[in-house]
Image (cartoon, rainbow, N blue to C red; front, side, top):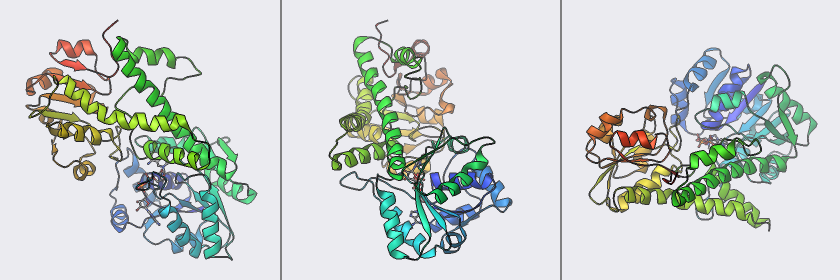
Length: 437
Ligand code: NAD
């Protein structure tokens, strides 16, 4: 099949490269000429494990190419995916759909022959109707269907998630479009692909419902962690104790500094707004949004407390800046609020991240960036593990302790055993690890 992918970001580039890998002919289109120039030169504009090799291989095989202009690729395509950004709109928190609508207008003028226009971006209920209206208005003669096909991949594990998804949600009532979508995804499976066909609005809402549920699960265990600290219980044991129940499941029960990233914060907020507009507010989701927002800055206060009540004039070393490991994505990362909170309290912040420093630098004014873990810790009064990169999981605690001026270790991801950290001379603080047992 011939596929055009508009938007070559985390989702578009990974989806395009994976679909090419399964034998389709894919053109990825992006407005950003620097991104396309980098891709044509074989450089990845984002960090995602395995992506460089996947892209290089498929470019070499002639199945994957890059353009800044969509006309030719859309005219030849069986399916045109819209994978542009849908950030929070400034001011009110609704999804900013201007990129989606702009892409729809551009696509409209280039359609030729029956084409399925697939919205892969996360978009509020009813956006497919508007995309259809825009295309119909711009090109009344076009033969097309608009399908919702939300993406569930996770950054850091994006290729595996795209190639082996738990499910593929396809929202359409058009039988011809459904057949095209089945053909797009058929090569991913030797047997039947786990495709769930729904109405378009249902598919759009399913994506938000999934993200809101996961965000609620994280927020639940985070609040439980605070209670554990207050009453002397251990949140990791609580998480295991509830997670072994198959009705609950153990995933997304790791207490931490609050969720961040390019999806959960904006999607939970957009869902809450959609529900308010529909006259059926989702109080649970609204509360999740509020609790999580407050939590990030509360982590800075936790560090201040661990440092004896003041960080003025102290140097705090942060390990990990990206919102999770194996990505360079800094969007809504907890490190942003934590850094601001520490700087407001008078601390100097030094930071290290294996892949995120380039993206972090413009977002973290006043922060000094270190070349590696141990130079980050050099002379620091406290060390804070913010993101659980693999490289931080087996640190040489003696070397760290010797390099630092102080002995405070705040482990916001619970990757160290408190007793072992104490044996190495650290005053250790994890998340939800009360001392009552
Ligand atoms: P991104 O910002 O990384 O990429 C979007 C790209 O679209 C940018 O490169 C931008 O230059 C390009 N673009 C914007 N308008 C364009 C146009 N008219 N024509 C061509 N290119 C255009 O965004 P992302 O993280 O890939 O997210 C894309 C969508 O997928 C969002 O709706 C997001 O919510 C959703 N999503 C993201 C993830 C994730 O993990 N990042 C997972 C699932 C779903």
